[in-house]
Amino acid sequence: MKLAVFAALAAACLIVAYGSPVAGERPARDHYYESPEPILPMTFAHEDHTTENCLVCHHNYNDDTGSGPCMNCHTTEQDVRPLLERQFHRLCRGCHADKAALGEAGGPPRHCIECHLGDDLP
Image (tube, rainbow, N blue to C red; front, side, top):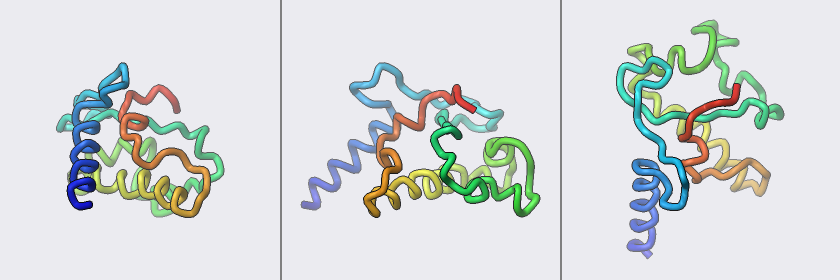
């Protein structure tokens, strides 16, 4: 059992790092959104999330901590930049996993390549 869990985790890490072996595109780390360090691209389709409360993600509308897209602060501000991966995985992937656990439609919580391709949607 432990070996199967380890193998699954290793496979997931490889897919995130190198892309899916069956996908035609592979995400590449680069200086997206003016990030000082290379990061993976991230896709987020607002049109697929219209049933969610905007304030769950857009805390800056409520607490006046910034303006504009998430990446304006999360990739450039020294205080939050080191937390980027942890924050977005907890928020985005966590929400999808929570919905799946409740049996609700919410998209795949573990198809990393789905989110880590270029963002061409607003």
